[in-house]
Image (cartoon, rainbow over all chains, first blue to last red; front, side):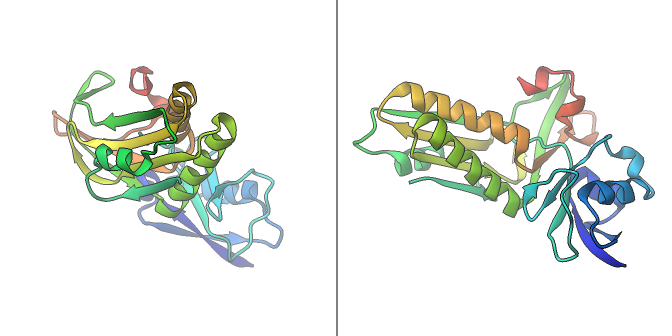
Amino acid sequence: MSTVTVQLFASYAETFGGPTLEVPLDPGSTVGDLVLSIKALPGAYALPESPRIAVNRRFASFDQVVHPTDEVALIPPVAGG
Amino acid sequence: MSRAAIVARPIDPAHLIAEVRSVDFGAISVFVGTVRESNDGRSVTAIDYSAYTSMAESELASIIAEAGDLFGVSAVVVEHRVGALALGDVSVAIVAGHAHRTPALDCTRFVIEEIKKRVPIWKREHYADGAIEWVDPTQSTGAATQ
């Protein structure tokens, strides 16, 4: 099993105590699988039901397959403007 | 000519207007967002903005491209600031030029609404009572999103 690095920002970096998470990744795992793994971690109670994930700088659907080399980020509710 | 950037310095809307200005345009629409002193009934003293910069600039570029398709506007400049901002500071400026006013006005409105939905930028407000909290528009009472 490999892992993927998940970038964290803003409130989520505080929730998990750092700027990244290393999350186990089975071959063929999807964004939805990744979210389930993240939601099993300590502190994940602060996440919404369906947190937004970006893969390679674009918002990803839950059925998108994730690869270990992808740039993955867990996106808190945005508040620009 | 269009451009979008996340910047860590003060934004000067006059510079953005000068960048867009052209004799081809009869209208230049400008939206400037500034830091206000209250949010959801609480007294705000300052705001820290942060961003996932590479994705934010990519999303801004996508929004500008979509605005071009929707409104036929080919000259849009957007800057969003990150870092520590004081009351009254400019947090975002959007400038759109077009031959006519309606596409220019519609474009700036579209861009700011899309920024609020999908550009990965966050703000942490400092309140007069000493509290510091991340702003979550999905949890606000609604007044802050107007």
